[in-house]
Length: 410
Image (spheres, rainbow, N blue to C red):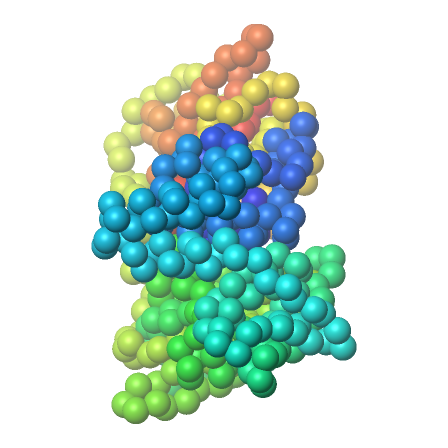
């Protein structure tokens, strides 16, 4: 899977995975030599959780390398844990969690079930916590709660297959006034019953910064979300239902994301109603100053054609002319006029006109989505390249860092 999907499965940021790669802690299974894209396997999810658990417990990167590489014996590892307990009493809880993650269970998969043999005095919750990571690492999705009977803990599972893209479905808008407003993201659960028991929530949803979802009036779209009665559209249609618990209104969404697209079942996204305000995309968005005065820049005037896209795993300084031009890019052409006007050609739209897009020295001002995209021109081997910020919905609404497009002078 690509680095973005792997980050989502691990509940972390892409920048963290890039750092772990650089430090040789968690190296991608494969890196495409032409595009530079990093690819990971499901088995590496457990490795990430081990690294993350040890990091929480206060271990240095060098200590983590020694532990997960097998350099230290089990006895030496236990000594390190005891030393850390003495040094950091406040971190005792995280140390215990790290020990759990480092434990290996003997899980038997048969007839759609995962079965774990345990001793009579074992802690059920600790065993299930370990099992969560191991099931994911083995490419299984848990689709029921854990059940314990004597010396056996079991749950129903689905074996995941290759990823497919479900077809987009467009539903007519039907109003549901009670869902309009702001909703707090409580977490994603394997099954709804886990929420009621407060077990195993995944807190991240479209990035660590995104803690709320908004249902706008008339089902209006913002970022990658819209809705109609009974469905959260992302853009696939995820069924929802609401339930009053105490004096709060909760929403349970059958989320058709990573596991679902690999032959699994929808997970359960839980939201809690915060308010019923009628928000607009503009007030929710992160916004730049797009009314900068015009300052000329002769170097930028003219037409530019898209060359490549630098995604989340890239920094603009990673660009090299050795990269092959990419086909079927979304942002296709960019033209700067001497008057300060500009024209942007996308796959399915064209933006031009003073109320839509203009420019000034060092910035393309996309007024239609409130973003000022900084550009830089580099001349390499006699050819001009423009590297420009791409402030997508992830930047405007999700708190992500900007991506970059690379253009070449036409």
